[in-house]
Length: 160
Image 1 (cartoon, rainbow, N blue to C red):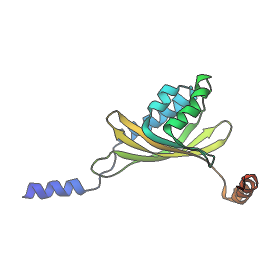
Image 2 (cartoon, one colour; image 1 turned 45 degrees about the vertical axis):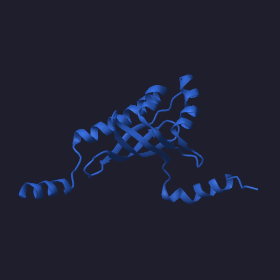
Image 3 (cartoon, one colour; image 1 turned 60 degrees about the vertical axis):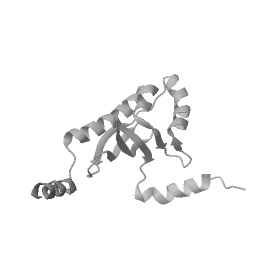
Image 4 (cartoon, rainbow, N blue to C red; image 1 turned 60 degrees about the horizontal axis):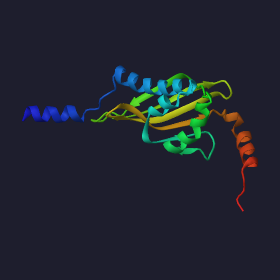
C-alpha cells in the first residue's frame, strides 16, 4: 500500500524539465532557423509536424504547413531563404506526466526588420520534437504603437 501511495504522489508531483530536454527542443528550433537561412526547404519543413501551422507578420498569414510549403518552396529553390538569429530564448516543457509538449518564446535579429519575436509550440513525436506552431511577430515599442496602428488602419482594405 505504501509503495502505491508513494508512486501516486511522485507521479502527481510537478516535474521540471532537465537541461537536456530543453536543449533538445532548442536544437529543433535552431535547426529550423539554420535551414531557413540556407534555403534548405527539405530540412526546414522536416522540423514541423504534418499538421503544423506558421503564423506570419501579416494578418493573412495563418498558413497550414502544406500551404506555407507551397509558398516558400519557390524561394528556397532559387536559393532565397531568410535569416533570423536567436539571441534569447525561453523553453518550457509541460510539467505533466507525458512531458510531450513544449512552448517557447525567443528574441530574434533580422537584417531587414531588426528585432523580431518568435514563439511556438512543439510536440514530442516518434521522430523526436517537432514544431506544431510557429508565430513570427514584429516588436513595436509602446511609445510607437498608436502611430503603427494608425498606419495599419490607413492601409487596411475596406470590404464592399
